[in-house]
Length: 495
Ligand SMILES: Cc1ncc(C[n+]2csc(CCOP(=O)(O)OP(=O)(O)O)c2C)c(N)n1
Ligand SMILES: [Mg+2]
Image 1: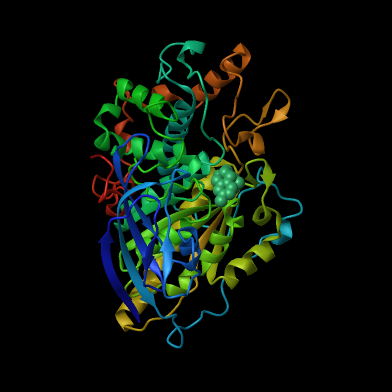
Image 2: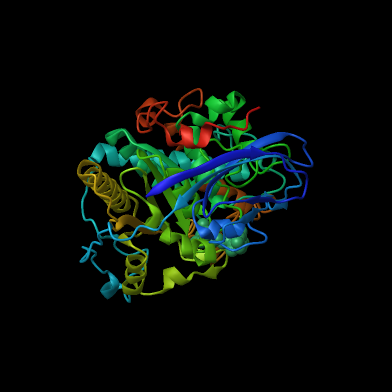
């Protein structure tokens, strides 16, 4: 049913576009020279749905036998393309062999919606509590370590472990980066780590709102991936300082999931392509699961809205799976999002209509949220494996309603709830730099110090500055880490 098309490589003169003869592209490997730096970089864009073809497409529409590929890198039009190779798959849409699941076990939570807020009792479709007390404590501490690193990346150029009182001189002179979705993204990654270990999964992560990069980069650092790639950002105080300072800093790395981020095939700067890239990556990779964090703002883009349908192209025998986590933190920058404001009955109906089975994890209380996410994510992974087993053992291709998660957590989760009488956590003010006046306002500097110390860095990082072994154990071993997945690191940017 699914046949791989040809692949080829060609050299492109600056500014020109490449005409290709395929119905549906699945992967574009682009080798380009950035005009300013003249460094050759390689990026891989996995593309799968007509929506993405539109993104790279200047002159044709999906479905036509020919489409043109134009490239944008870091929001700049890329003019010095060295080489492009395209892998394409001819897709005939699955028809009669696909069974549709009918009555799905999704509990609607809408009844409580009028009285419930994200600060109320945690709500979850799957009511299991798989974590022991010890695991729960360690998971919270690991989460705190990641959040500490997120703040370090946003603010610090010195004094990385706060071994001396925080002073203005330790703060970066220009503060750029995002806090708003860091906690939700980190939370998701940490819970997937547990399952990668438990089920020996071949998984990797895609961050739709790539500006929440600290949430994932902090995890790549905690698990050791970042230091393996960049030895100068080692797992000690000196390495941590370099790791913090380079973030969103001249001569360092961008504030998004940029190409030089290990574990990333998707920058997320232009919203809308997370699911398409995820599907492109798992087609023909039957063992792979792409854990895909989709922003509620991102969901309002046309490409994202259509790419939920990519599940129609997924063959459970020959392809892997995409596990979307729709992150309803309520805001797209400073505007409320549609999917966070509609009733859950409508949201469930929408996701079911797209062919998914939604599971909800909603709240802000750490202990109960950890249990809810652990149970729900595990349930989803088991469902995926069950469907794959069924298809692979029977040889019968069918289209299950694959699981997906709706994660509702406060924007800026774990930040101070109010600053100067204004809401921060749970509000749009948490989107970018949460405390904006730390350089000029000693009171805010004190607040930042108190907040960072509330994660207890002295307990989480040992004498040298490395994550303590009992927490490090929570991450998968080298070779299995999501940050080191072949899907992201086979073609690197380290030349
Ligand atoms: C196609 C596109 N439109 C608009 C923007 C500008 N923009 C950057 S971040 C953002 C909000 C994203 O909201 P969401 O996906 O909910 O991410 P969150 O900040 O909550 O993590 C917008 C609109 C963009 N980057 N790309
Ligand atoms: Mg959002």
